Image 1 (cartoon, chains in turn purple, cyan):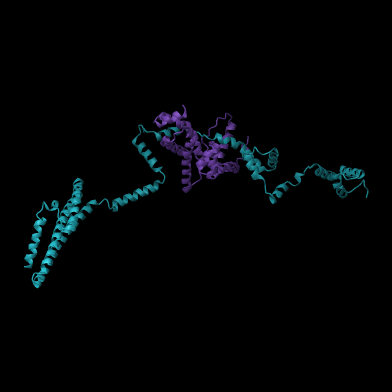
Image 2: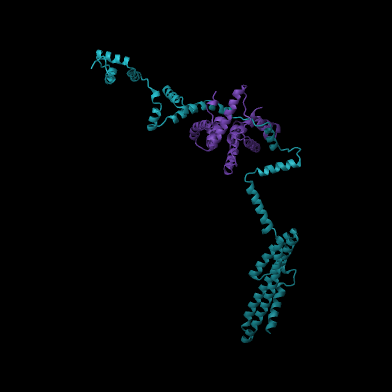
Length: 188
Length: 328
């Protein structure tokens, strides 16, 4: 079913269509939330909150072509609000990156699968060491592949800032991964 | 000096001329023969002529020189290996970057991470949550709550309440508001207010009786004046007193009716009869108009005096009589 029709059905209160929409985009929303917070439990709660907001605001998204940026914008708002609150009220201890987080990977080779999962965990741990804007650029540009203009509008910064920050954020992330031990043992 | 057996120092003196091709053939032969025989001079010649740098001799030389001059080029190399917008760079630039990477283990490690990191990030756009996630979202957004036990409903409601941002602040606000309402709100004790208004009415009655007494004292005070002037001066005074009294009587009657209605409204409020109170307020509005006319012109409307005995026509002569009888 096309997204346009799916959205229309959701707006009309079709619960089955809504479930299909949730199942279609849950990985992406959860991925965004996980990229922001790096904690499975928090990411799960945030992703659920994102979907609740999407559900309430479905009627405001009239253009299906803009659904993905619209959805990411909501997800970003929820995650940034959460980070702001967490900054004001930090947890008593550092929350570790879960070992049991489900990292989608269909590599049949077990050894390669282990390396890929180790790398992904390193990426998530590295993301948590970045500044919020660098983290956002990595999540929105590198992971979600949003256009730079969209990111600039979302973050309310000039387009040139996004362009220059993108490279810098990538370098910072690579350095953080190196500092976390992502050295030669994780090479192919 | 034997030209066939030259020292290394002599050989070194001839090196520049040799490289320039300025040596005579005999000297050139001697120079080359020494280089063949002396390994140290042969290495130096190879280094100078062929550019074979003995890097192992001074491995930190480059970094030391860069530290004292332009600084390390790692930043530029990082931007190059991290970015894709370097297509405009020429081949020589990339060769220099490769050469830097060969000698900089830090940049080499960074490049290795970026090699797997950059293609991996788009693949991380989606991360699968646990299988119960979608069901949780649908339950949270469903319009029909389904068959849930009351415990589950209360738990879900409480979960929603405590997850509200600034929940503590809201609870504190509501608690404070509740304390104010229960302890000291000016709105709640409306019955006390009604009783208070009724007490004002009784005070008004006592004030009216005091005003009556004052009127009698005024009339009594006018009697000596009447005797002293033989009644000539008294007439305008008497007329003025009569007018004042007429206005006073009209005003007090209007005020009396107003306060009577007011008392009814207060009583209705006290007893919780709000419809009667509303009707009473409507009557008070016309009472206020009548009172205003009485104060301004001494008029008393029929609506006030019609039902009572104290009309303007009956009261004025009574006041006149009253004053005359007192004077006489």
